[in-house]
Each structure stands twice: as structure tokens, then as C-alpha cells.
Amino acid sequence: MKSVLLIDASPLFREFLKEKLTRENIQVEIAQGKRDAFIKTNSLLPDLIILDITDTFADITDFLDKKRNDPNARKIPIIVSGPHIDNAKLSLLVQFGVIKYFTKPIKFDLFFEAIGTVLRQQFSIDITPSRIELHLNNNIIFLEIALGLNREKIAILRYKLTELITSNKLDNPKMIIMITDTEFSFVDGANIEYLFDCLLSDKRLEKKNIKVLSFDTFVTDFIDGHVSLKGIEVSTNLTNVINSLVDSIGSTAEDIQTLILDKVLKADKNVNNGSVEMRFLSDTNTTVVEEKKEGQEPRIAILDTDPSVKNMLTTALRASGYKYDLYDSGMDFLNGLGKHHYDVAIIDILISGLSGFEILKQIKQQQKHLPVIVHSPTSRKMDIVQLFTLGAALYLPKPQKPEIIVQKIKELLNGNPIRTRKTHA
Image (cartoon, rainbow, N blue to C red; front, side, top):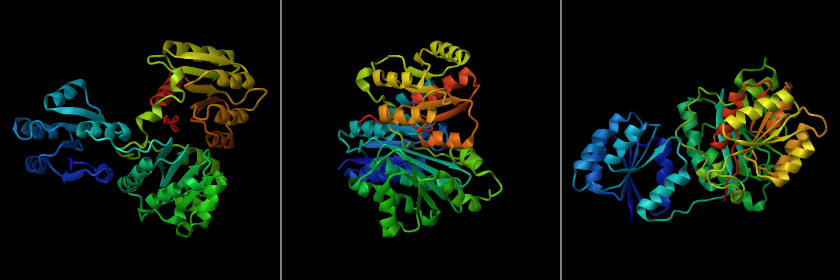
């Protein structure tokens, strides 16, 4: 049996990794502290060492130096995970025999690919297209699920949720689960059950504090008919879902739509979001890979009728190396989607003819996983809520600085949006 020594890993990282590797018939040993790590390295002589930097870079160099100078341990390969480091430190790690360095948050499909290469073992990885996003604002945990249910990501979610509750010291956490652009059937029943088993494994999250927003009748019927899920509320109205939690978060005096926009749909930047990604590398791949050649510039679709805005956008995109197509009407824009593959779309919903909301609905049918930035002067909060419900990735009020728009495009292209792109299976 192959063996792995896991050193100084955070609880989430440690428990998920141990569970996954054990299922793959790999022995996992845990070491806490560099002294314990060196003792176990020499006594176990594992096939692989995975070292997680939880403190500072300097803390691991003593262990790595001892390992390099030990004739028995010298050849054991090491994979390290940690914060972003400069090239000088990366070069130093190579001298210590580190074969791979993963910057946190880790994308686990790449991580297991590296482990499998070292151990010469192929792992079984669920590649079901799935998007699972988790963020916290106030004491409300907002969970978005789209495309499908991937068991690997659900397993990560279990530990991610516990880490989020613990690190942010939530005494009475509330959760909103948003499942608005996915249709399930009876074949998904086992995965839905597994999802709620993982969520409810943390006893601090009570069923009465879980609200589900979904238009899928199968999801509603499944939850309503499942005895162990009694107490979880399902609704088709986000306002009603938020309203049911208002009293518990002490915000009864606030306008409910402001609460939706500012405290639920947006993540709190001061929150500890942990060290693990529920997105995989494949989540940043294009939907239609055969139309994209390596090194080809990203292509942006722009729907706007304001000449000054179009001039500003095209100048900024051209300077950033992006290709773009301009559209003056909703029908022309939708026709363009049928002919071309786009990486990001920027649209103004306040245009004549076809409504912006209808355009978003059509996008879901033609290029369902196209990230859409709504760049519009609309200020009605219900409009903004509806935009997110219809799948918009981001809302930017007009006027907006071009550098901000370009930065948001880069975040979407790099797989760091509010809503990510389709996983390519």
C-alpha cells in the first residue's frame, strides 16, 4: 500500500485529503510540528510528503534542510501548499527537493493529478460540471449551486462549511441555498441527499435556519418529502427567503432589498474564506474548447447603444489585448451568440427593443455558462436582484471607470468571479 505523510495541514485540508486518499487505498499519516514531522519521515519513509505552510516560509526550511541531508529521507518527493511566494523562494524549494508548489486556495483536481503522478496511481475524480460558491455576509452563509452536483465538490463543501463557521465564530449560522438555473431529476436524488448530509453534518447549522431558493419542482418535492429534511424551507422568491431571516440578524429596520443586495449577494471582504477552492482548474476552461486555440486573445461581446461608453470600452479592451464585437440591439447580440464563442459579455439592460431581462434569459439558452457583466444605469434594487437571479455574474453601475471593467473581466477569465464559468468535462 502506498503511503503519504501529511505535515502541518489545517483541519479542513487534513480531513478532506485524508478521506479522499483513504478511499483510494492510500495510507495517510499525520504529523504536527517539524520535530514530529522529521521523526515520522524517518520511521515511515512514506512514498510522498505533503507539507502545508500554515505559519511562515522560514518555519519549513529547517525541516527541509534536515530531510535533504538525511540519506534515507533525501529522495522522498515533497509537494508543498501555501501562500503566494516569490520566484526566489520557489527556487529555494526546488533545491530542497520540492517537486510541486500549490498556492492557496488550492484547486483539488490539479492537486490530485500531481499526487497521482508521484504515486503512479490514477485517482477517480468526479468530473460532473458543477459550480458551488460559498460566501458569508453578516451571519448568513450564501451557497450557490449551478450546472449540476459534483460529489468531489460536495465533499469539499462539507469541510469548507465547518471551517467557515469555526474561523468566523458563528454562534447561530443561517444559510441560503440558491439553486436557480439547474433542473434535477430522480437520478440526482442520491447526490441531493449527499449534499444535505454534508451540510447537516455540522450540528451548528440547524435545519430551521436553512432556506432554499429554487424553481425546480423536483428539488421542492424531494426536500418536502424527505423526513430527515423536515424544517428546511423551500421558496421561489428571494425576498421571502431573506425576510424570513431578517429578525434573526437584527436588521428589521433596513429596507429588505438593500439587505438582499448589500448583505447577501455580496461577500464580506473581511471574512476568513479559508484555504481551499471548490472550483477546479477545469472551471476556468472555455465551454467550446475546439474554437479556442492556445494563446488566442479572449473575445468580449458588448451590447450598448451609448457611443461614448462603446468608445471607452473598446479603447480599454484593445489596450488589454482583448478582441471584441459591438452590438447595438438585443436581437443582433443574440444572433452573434449563435455564431461566435465569447469569453465574457458586457450588456446594458436599459436599451430599446428586447428587454435586458429577456436577453439574460436567452443567454442561458444559447451560451448558458457565458459570464455576463451588466453595465447599466439602473438603480432599482429589484432589477439588480433579478439580474443575479437570471445568472448575471456582476453588476456595475454606470458610469464606471474602464480600468475597473477590465479588472472584472480578468477576474472572470481567471475563474474568480461571483459566478464561475462552465466546467469542461
